[in-house]
Length: 179
Image (cartoon, rainbow, N blue to C red; front, top):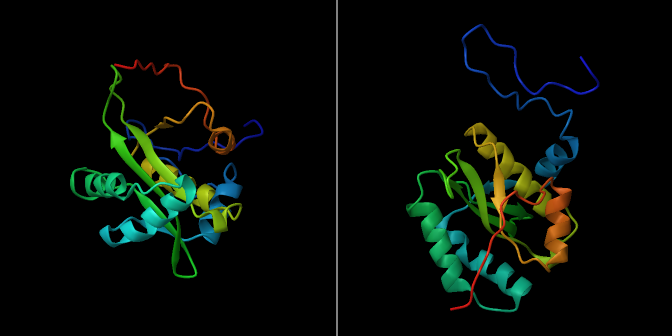
């Protein structure tokens, strides 16, 4: 074996492979972030806290948009993967995500991050890392192998954060046209 650990459990011939999530040798930092910041599934009564965090981040009231995304996540999705992070009994971050069973000619399921936010008062405390780490673990348990998102090309803070979390430019280019 070379210097890295294999992430698969040995299996009997013909048996499906299983991912070994107990092997933290390659994700020590992420495991610690999840341990320090409790993360749980999003609930309907989280809307006020999520909207308040989003308002502090964007300077706009996007409650209607967030309510629609929350309703979609809770009632119109077969798989619930949206999460909130809590510290000292307060919601300090959230990630709204979904599982896309195929898009643009791809047939493999992918996790899609719609919206992510961390209360500015808790920036730099591992909240974002804990949210994305738990999201990745949950999606991995569902055998989803890819996580993607779309961000503004000039949002350097988000680009830096996502790059630190292992994201890289996708092989597809999103195009838009004003009508």
